[in-house]
Image (tube, rainbow, N blue to C red; front, side, top):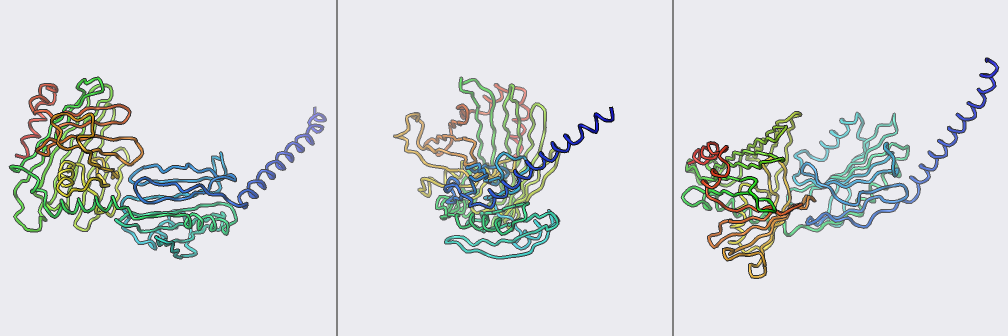
Length: 445
């Protein structure tokens, strides 16, 4: 038996050596590919931003070829090598809707601290339209390098570029990083500037200028494509009359809201909102519950223009951003449309701040009533709203001659109808919420 084992052992050694040889060949091939000329994609545009980038693609690199929205940031990435679950190189661009408050130098040191590395170089690159501050961060004991760049964009937007590599060739990594920078194209977003002008006009006018008799109420029944009633929304907005100052610094504007969907996808969200008349400070709170989970969010805008979002859930989160001039809470969508009509702007981009803390760039365009085949006799104005986060959500909003929203058609996978209704109609359809509805309706009177 021992002789048999002794006879087979050299065969095992040969197999092991062959495996090592094949692994070495594969590694050598990866290195050759990595060091060969890298091709880049055609410019990949981020819709309605004026920004496009070219990412490494081909010769072992794989790019997603599209921007993706997550947590108030748009990202696009490339990996090397293709198909690996442990890539040796990674390139990423991030478009931040609201710029971080830290300086580039502070962010370089923070990034180095996160990976237990050191900043070995700081520099700046100027393109035709952008200034990119960047740093090289090294962890030499494991041949790991990071090239990290950041650029401040107009309207408090921000662009970050990052390249990580774990091969012992930082020269090539730097070349790819700089090639991404060279391929950047940016044109100032005029629709976003138009949105910022509208929001500024609202703040200058003061929110109380939009309220009739210090009270604005809106109740809508929600219907599915078959026109079955499946839920409702309720919003009350009032001027409490407590702000006597000219600056609008006191929180005199208050609002409450309730959104409810019943059935298999049961969901309920209650909101409360309080702000100054000029909207330069606010507190926005929401609590959401579904069939299996409950969560809460608190959004605070302070006098310095910094917004803090706190999420109360299984793993609490807190993030702070520098809010841009075109940002406005979804509470004031109706006032936004009214100001567009008064300003005669037909198309704008604004950042809608949702109750869950998301900041979503949104295209709003006026539509000629005579050219809209869905318009009924009550339609005096029509707007189309499109969320630019890639979800495919859009909405057509109908206003009557009093500039009051009376119908909304929301589209994503299906068309959902929101029809304006009286409070008592909501109570009859949803008697289980009657007490809550009446209490919320009365609390701000």
